[in-house]
Length: 416
Ligand SMILES: *Cc1c(COP(=O)(O)O)cnc(C)c1O
Image 1 (cartoon, rainbow, N blue to C red):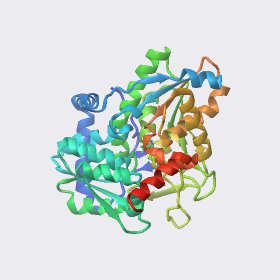
Image 2 (tube, helix red, strand yellow; image 1 turned 60 degrees about the vertical axis):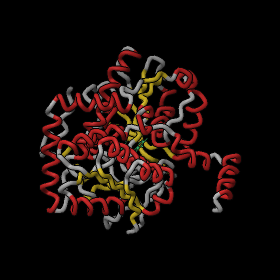
Image 3 (cartoon, helix red, strand yellow; image 1 turned 60 degrees about the horizontal axis):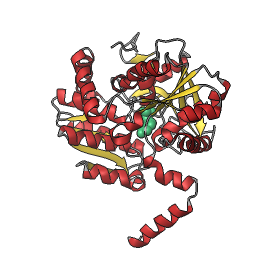
Image 4 (tube, protein in one colour; image 1 turned 45 degrees about the vertical axis):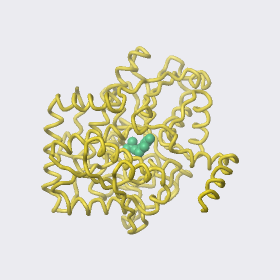
């Protein structure tokens, strides 16, 4: 297996982005993690062990599906989709957590902690902990705990302890701080399972490494199905892990254009979206252990973010993607909430697929660009997850009457 060498200069840096900015007290823990990951990455048997786990537990390889109806409807490029929605727990997040579970066992640690916003990463981590017999604590902002009851319910029933963080704005950023505090206190037996390809080195590289399974599979599959490599690959970008995963399949193929799709929310302007690179509202800074573009004000305080997709609602972006964007290897675009709602309707009706709202950002950009492409051209979209989890948001957005009656009846039943 050949992986792009991300670090031509200082280790953990990609151009000026990345690095490892942590309190001194965590130095030995992060050194130990980095060395363990180095050894695993250099050992082909480790990658085989990881692949075997993903095959038997999560149903890999996930297929690539040709969207014949949607392609015909748009009248341009032929559209193929990599189906990460078919993984156990419903998204690509399981690739990262199972990989870090294996690392955790190699480190001899018996306890994992994680931060979660929408709850998807916490849910995947609790699943991994149950499977690998690890104790598990999930930090979540109190506001998010209230908003994401179904995920909290499953995490607890999978055996994890969910902590509602009452500090600050009581959302993801505060959960990350609390998680770091726990790690400092319990680093001897605890591994921090970071949820996306962000944070201090080696997390951006390590998470990208586990997610590369997406791109390595897709590269083979698209050549089998379509006869050659795609002309363009689209992936949504929250922290950047599923995008890094699929992009790595074609990173060295100059003829393949890579398109990262961010959360355009209500459109450009501070506070109304979560787009770090496609819109000009972010700036370079150091926060949460690494250097990248952040949505922040002049004093370095983080801006409010908004997206219809909770999983894209994040202030920073993977430093490797920031570097590849600067090098013009990856083009960045944004899809607005309205474009995403439209795209979801079209994909459901034409293909019977229900992509996650996050993934639908990639569909929305592909749908916008496909008609101008030739019929002999090929698009590959990464469907990072399934949309079942979004039923509340989508039903709200399309103002579904029967759904509202159902919710009202349930509220009456429970006396809410
Ligand atoms: C969490 C999530 C994302 C965003 O995370 P990345 O690290 O950018 O991949 C995208 N899609 C789905 C389905 C998610 O659950």
